[in-house]
Length: 365
Image (cartoon, rainbow, N blue to C red; front, side):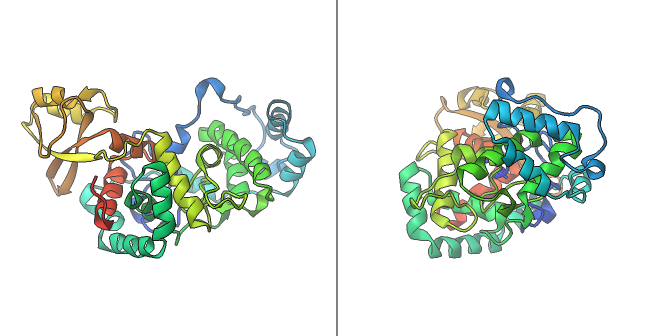
């Protein structure tokens, strides 16, 4: 990413692979470096209004004295049924994090695949994934079997998102979301929506909203779910009454698997296959298209694309290429399951890295 945003999911400044990513914690080959998968999960017809009337910054007024915050409070109470006292109490306690604004505004630097791969799908990431899987194999395999999603894929997502939980982020989610909701107009609509989701999430989980931590953009836990993703796809897999994606491996593994299954993961299907091409303006045009399953493999064959592995002509696919060395490129067909993982994070390099980590752990897709 997207932005599985975070994932995309998604998304933390402290991620092990952050030196390879944009300031939002995502690869820079996305269609929009800020618009990650978790940002694209919003439903336009159901989105709340954007409370952004001219007003001083919340850094000057504080939250409760800010008219946009007061309008947001009334909306959440009237439309989503949140208690007024709960909302007033939240904004009387939440802190301001102005230092994350420059991070969000910092432009991403696009890196070629051969550099991105080193930090995000190299031998250390794969060996770390093998150790993590060995340690938690029983519960990860249970989640994989329940949802029909390969265990190595689940592990790979956690590896690239937070280095298997080592870098989950330590910023209070309440502070990051409140700051971005009312002092970052560029994506204020998104973060106001996520803040509303977060306030409902805290009530549903029966937790103090000040107790959640995550990335500077509000992504949470080992899989870096945004609040809207958490509410839709997080799972209480061990039945203890909480969906804990910060410390609970059964819940985390099942949540990632559920996300993939709900987005259409096809059990037994491949993610990508290498391809040979006869370079032409048509091939270049295909590579330059945005990521979408617009063509069948049969159509792509007619335009000069030859899969290097067996794949049915009726399968939907898109063509992309990665720079494997300076000025050298390899071509691939992204298949249905590639597109599923791309929903988690809108970056072809990210998804390819996930596939390579998973293959290194023992997957075959």
